[in-house]
Length: 375
Image (cartoon, rainbow, N blue to C red; front, top):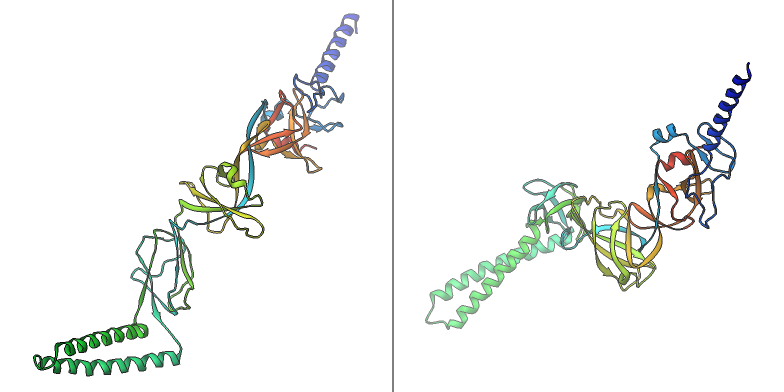
C-alpha cells in the first residue's frame, strides 16, 4: 500500500469513528430538572437498539420510524388543578324509574309479553299484569266477607224498591238513606271482589330502556319487590364520593375518564356522610353515553385553582423497573434518556408534569412504551 492509500484509509477510519461518536452526542436542549446537561454523559457507542450503561437507550433512525416515535418540545404553563373521584352510574329520577309490586301477587304477561333487559319501552306501556294472592285463611275471610256483602246487597235492593213504591207515604229522607246504603254496599262488594280475583296492570312510569327485569310468567312476587328498572341511556346520574366536604364548591367542570365526550353538570354535594365520604352528584348527558346502572366510573373534576407545570399527552408516561413514572427525552439523534417525574391529571387525555422535567426538552409523546421496553 502506498503512502497516499494509507492517508485515504486513515481519513475514512476517522470519519467512521466520528459518525459513531456523533450518534451518542446530545441535541441542544437535553437537560435535567435542575438545569444540568445530560448530553455526552455516555461514551459507549451502539449501532442498534440497546440499553446503554448509564440507563439511556440507543434507537437508530430506521427503528424510530418503524416504532412511530414522535417528540414534542415542551413549554411550561399554568393549568386548572384537577382531582379524580371514584363514582358510579345511577338512574336519573327525572328520566327513568323503578317498577315495584304494589301487593303480593302472581305475574302474567301483558299484551306485548313480558319485556326483557335492553328492550325499549314508552311511558304508560303495559309491562305485566299482577293477580293478587294471599294465604288460605286470608282468602277464606275475604270470600266470606264477599258472600255477606252480596247477601246484604240483595236485601237492600229489595228494600229500596219497596220504599220507592211507597213514595209519598214514606218520608223522602228514609228512601235516600236506603239508596245511599245500597250504593256503599255495592262499592264494598266490588273492592273485595277485586282483591280476590281482580288484576292490576303494571305500566312503565317513563320512556327508556329496561335496565333490569326480575319477573317470569307465573312468578309469585311480594309487595314492594322490584320488577323492572327503566333508564334513559342518554340521561343518567353520576354519584362520586369525596372525603373533602367543601370540594363541591370548588368544582368548575367535570368529565369522565372512561367516556371523555360526555357532558357532566354538577348538581351539588350532599350534607351527610356515606361510608365516611360526601356524595357529589353530576348529571351526565350525551349521545356517546354508554354506561350501565351501578357501573364504576372515574370523575375528573376541574377545580377553580391553578397549577404550574408542563402539559403532556398521557401517552408520554411510562413506568421504570422501580415502578416510578418517567418520561423519555431525546438527548441526541439516536439517544433517549428517562427522567422520573411527578404528574397531575389534567383531563382524560392530558397530564401536567409538576416536578422532574424542565422546559425546552424534547419529550417522546408517541412510541414511549416501545422505547421503555428496550433492554
